[in-house]
Image 1 (cartoon, rainbow over the protein chains, first blue to last red):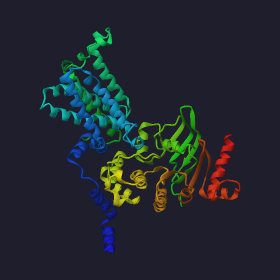
Image 2: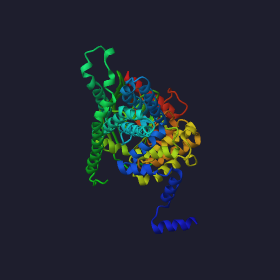
Image 3: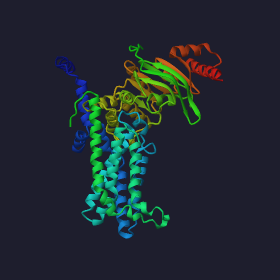
Image 4: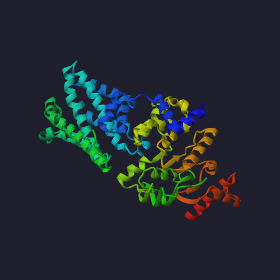
Length: 252
Length: 259
């Protein structure tokens, strides 16, 4: 039998070991989900698609935290009207996610830093993906409460837009953490700009609600959408230039 | 063991590194081509820092690092270099909820391997470290030695031209250690391998070259046989075997030169 296989191997010029390894790989590994297949096609990278698909798996706590934050935000908005949650949530989220995926808690951080797919690129990708998932949850929530729509606008939409911007800058600068810093500063700018007229007053008299009111954020919705679309375009352009550098044709 | 490729895969020139004001590497000059180099030295000698520089985790404070014929400071080159590196850190972190297969596959993808080649390569790497029966086991249920072998599997999955292993035999039982040395000898045919270890027997049986480090400096370089010969010629150095005595003598002479 073994000799027969060897003859087949030689006659057909087939590497049977490789074939069997492929079969074992299909048995040992999970089948590729339809979602991962689509993501691979969209982002054009099997590595980034896997990172996106496994992020919630690795850090289920972040999905839970998002749901909890949404619930808490809903409760505070309904009961007290205090704007602190939507005001601080994006920054807290950036800090928290940075810690979770940075050297602080990512157990494989050192290994990730030796990969051609830069570790500092992985961070904003994961952040954006998790918050996109959170947005979907919140959108589902809007079916049950009108207040949830405000929470979506006040927190999640800006967060997703700024995360995409961070990725775009990260791609342009080839994986620098600059994107995260710029996004954080932009959020500060968005928050501080409506408060410009009040900055002379004592802190206790500043009405922070103006900065993150539904009206203020809604007025910026087109900008958030524009930033999101532009960031995606930049990501696509970056890939195109990267591929063309290798002398390969752009394909979608 | 015959070295077949003489291309300089590692070329370090006057490399220095410090953490704060503490200088941990002093003027390191080193070249290496295909084969296995054992890095020996006491704790704090600078072995891990040197490996982290070779793995492109750390940028040296001074000096030039050329890996696989490319400049590690150049971003585009760095990406190319990283595709061809395998690295097992001393503190090997992992995702406990991943299976062995998923973990190795995850890093194979991050190494930008051809997606169509990934699964057969992952299978081969897992089989080479003898973990085929644990391929679908979650990492959190593995013993320390098995986790170490998963670390070796992810390091070799892309058949790296430069393989860097920081204390790879920690936690391995004697049988696995013997298997691991065989794996190293296989890799030596086509890769430049650096192994940091405290175990002189690993160096004696699997390495073509030995570099002994002390206080951030290279205090000895040669072959395991030469180190053993030096040990045989020494009567006052500490150690049970000739190689251990050679190692102790090399460290002592390095300290004498530094002071």
